[in-house]
Image 1 (cartoon, rainbow, N blue to C red):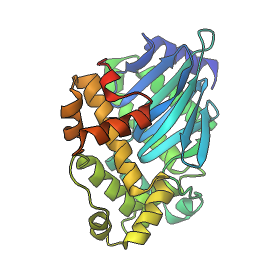
Image 2: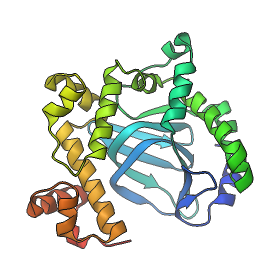
Image 3: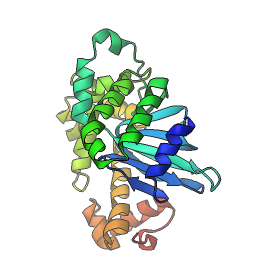
Length: 287
């Protein structure tokens, strides 16, 4: 990533960690020290690293994202992430929430021949190379973000162009399949949304499979291929991520948190939380 992009990003960054911008769904992140590997959940977004690197871990897969590639998360995926940064060379990244309707309109407009050129990475997270076109796109977006008025008027067209670049990337085949209702990827993506909308309820795997007109074995196979987790593992991780947010962001007590995320047993919730985060929920502190 060239220096002029970093210069524009630094004009927008006022503090370490999360910095919102003048455009909804676009944020910048800075870290000035190493952040140890820990749980994180990305939800249908594009991550562009401007400086430094992160290493993400999901079962049986490790991937590095840096200034030479971008990360696309076209489903909601919980994984563990480590950030490499220092005072001398901070980590600087941009997170862009992908508008599903806008992305769908772009993908359905792309001709079939162009879509066929995109390789399919079966996991629900994929990387692609930062091209000169994308660098130029990111630079113009950062320039526009300096002004509330320019963000309002010019932001969406620039994002639409960026979506197009991502949708025609070398590895974007999975993204295309997500929007074709007959494809297994689209059905699993729909099931993931069902889980997120109902994580605090009793979720039955056979019922989830039946809703998507899939056998339990096929549902399980494709679910794990895309998310790297079994359905039950995935549901547990989503609940625990929600639980941590309730404790840290909304000051929930442990007992009420357990019930709020769908646990019937407080002791089981505490064991799962400690196993996932390395400390019991009672030691989680409100931010």
